[in-house]
Image (cartoon, rainbow, N blue to C red; front, side, top):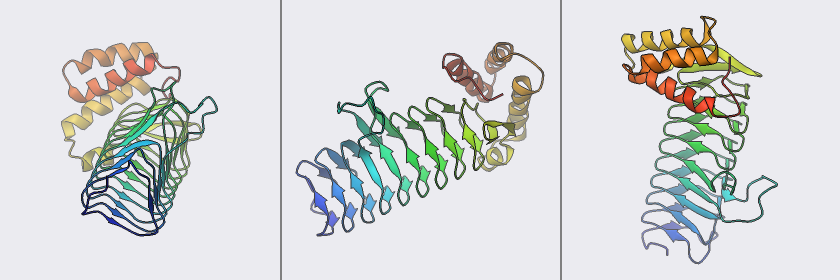
Length: 265
């Protein structure tokens, strides 16, 4: 179904069954598969391929040579049905690739709202991105990676499969992330290690001095006082009962304790 308000270049191919909503703009030489839905006011510049069971929300801008919903690169994948879901107001720049999920990972690759994926970003199968995330040029997420809200991945950086990146994290450019990165932390290097609290980023998002002081205290408990992971985790669970920012850290550590990656230390 193609809404009559959509503007589609005659060189583009829209397979029967695709849903193209109001005021969508599709430029030249795009291919839209039969199981794709594109939300209102989304723009495809040119040479965009969207395939598989893929749902894209409203007001997204997708630049040339982007591929979304294509078969993933997991050799265990045998053609089973899996999906990609993308929210609203995302900016997806040139040559990005976003692959469909796998049965082992729940069958879904999901991107939230208001994210910026810069040139040549790769989002592998079963990744989950929150809202307001930024991945700079040539950033790569392996399969099953999770980015919480406001996470930033620097250019030329790669995140190992199954890693979790916490809210408001800043991963510096040219980094290799092989373990979970707790919320609010700056991580840098190959392999990435912690370099303090993302203070400037938090200030820009309106965190006050009291909140910043509590986050810095939590960072010291986790990284500066010689505590084991479990000792630091238990102390932060206690502090988190009375502080929402520390609770975000303690909740993250609870999830990380159950994963096979561990946190950067």
